[in-house]
Image 1 (cartoon, rainbow, N blue to C red):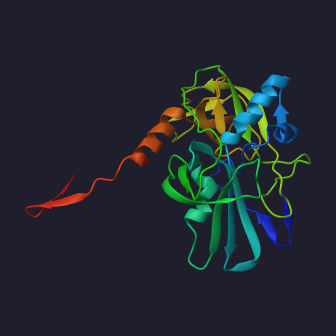
Image 2: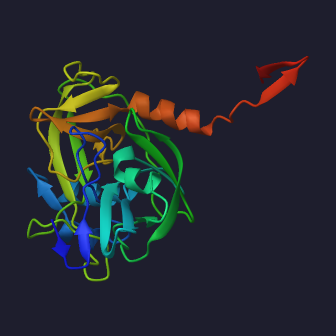
Image 3: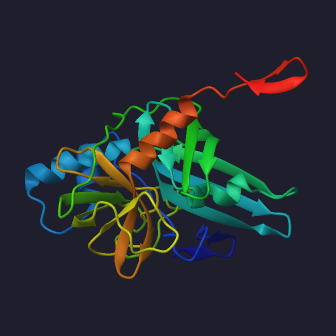
Length: 273
């Protein structure tokens, strides 16, 4: 965790189960990306190059907050997102929660950046949230030059990859800031423990991975071997990483794209059309 006299990284969590931060993919320079990515597990040369390019589709989300009661301190929430179209990304609600629930008098900014160009931040706004299932959609001011993702369903014992950008080579969390312009990616191999987990009280529409990922992978993808998104990481519990299934993610995205029904008054009664 990075901390200085004017900067503090605030781990945004909606509950004790929430996984804190994340960062994003590699961006436009695959060669540079391969040098800065930390590969957990064995990845041959061709797979490293493939995953470096794949990471472009998972931008970094950066929230900065200045609180009225503490104006000399900047608070950060950092996370990863999933590019579902050129100018819309999907992430965890707890990554952007403090910005979404900004109290009167506090100031904040919400930006997204391609990890290949971390200093070229793109302003974003929240267009839909679901705090219960921990999802949020962000609309970007301009398009990102990366390939939007495709989705697939997870299978038990399936080999998967996770992508996140929480730490630098020294093990400290990297913040998108003038003093720390670089991001360090983490790409790990794992296997699906359960494509539809049932051992977390009060949770539904989630699956789990056999091991806990590093803190900082919130909002990051769970990818199959065809680079399709089978889930989005959301929290760690009892030594395993839990992810929101692609089915749940797609339903949320589809709901956001469906125009809201307007109330219509007919003979003194209100109906919905």
